[in-house]
Length: 241
Length: 180
Ligand SMILES: Nc1ncnc2c1ncn2[C@@H]1O[C@H](COP(=O)(O)OP(=O)(O)OP(=O)(O)O)[C@@H](O)[C@H]1O
Ligand SMILES: [Mg+2]
Image (cartoon, rainbow over all chains, first blue to last red; front, side, top):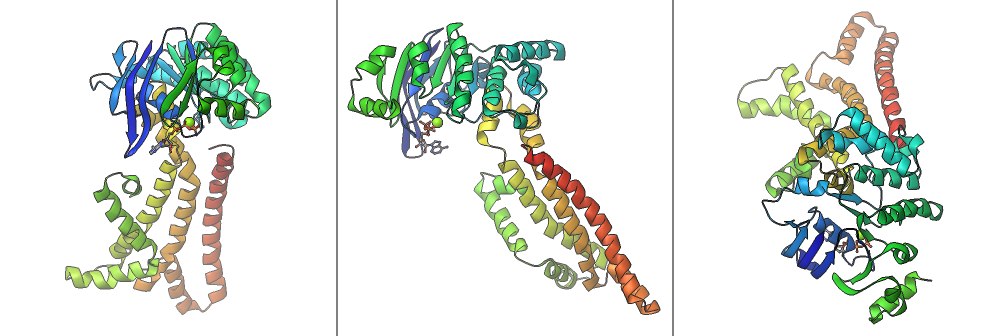
């Protein structure tokens, strides 16, 4: 589904990502962790073409992201993205947030889009919040609307960039539960997160990044039990208090 | 003006920024004087007070309104725009449905406040002999010698109009505190 080959990216002289290789198959969930500034967010943005990269290749469903003839707008419809700070449109209700892209991009009718949005709101557990503005929702509710907004485009891949790190502890679970359901429902997911409980439960692979490189990768238990590099051990000891 | 200040093109950004900083650090009254007394020397013929005052106001207020626009557009975070893109919206769709409406809602209170200030500043056109409200009052005052009532009346007119304006502005600010 996603294939990254020898991908490198620089901001000016500063190398943010260096020679990233990764294959994510359909239906897999990959969790990416690593210290701040290691390039995790940048990696996600390179996958859906929000950031250009200078070397290597990224293929999504066989389509090259960096190929100038690729229609990035079309490609992004297949890749939902959820942000750390929710990034809901503040001037629209939850329902409008969800229906904007289906209406404007997929040219669905208002009825169709509205019906689908209500289904999604029910799926993320807040069917009664359709007409609320983001400012009147809790962080956990906002993030769930953001997930519904991404799902409304019926993406084949969902990317999450630290979806719970801006949330109060009591709201983390409600968001993680939605994500766990998605993963178990067969969605292909790339999740930047330090929620190791979540990683243990659903990750097919865990990647540890530092200074723009993938330092270590492993499947759930193996990753936690026997980290090979010192850096990973050090990092894990900090987050698994 | 506002767009020039967020432009990535250096040849647009620097001249506009220079101009904005120049004008913003000069009192309005001086700009009015300039246009009325200095421009005729450059152009070679005298200017009527009215067009000259209007030009001064445009030159001066454009920089302030430009700065409000800039702040408005910059208040919309890069991530929010990227959230739009990530759902497949195009550049024009994100601009039209996200950037512009959000930015305008956020700048509305300052826009109204600045409009009030501009309106009050019209009294400065007095210095080049333009008969705006205060000046007209002074003329009537010269005829009738009832200064307190007359200028009191003018103050009341200014107060009512500006107060209404600020009420409207405050309503938008309340809305904004709710998350805009
Ligand atoms: N637009 C930019 N221009 C220049 N440097 C940038 C830009 N965006 C990010 N960087 C730098 O790239 C590096 C990687 O950033 P990135 O946001 O991908 O890290 P991250 O792993 O997501 O960190 P965090 O956990 O803090 O979110 C950082 O050192 C950051 O300062
Ligand atoms: Mg990040």
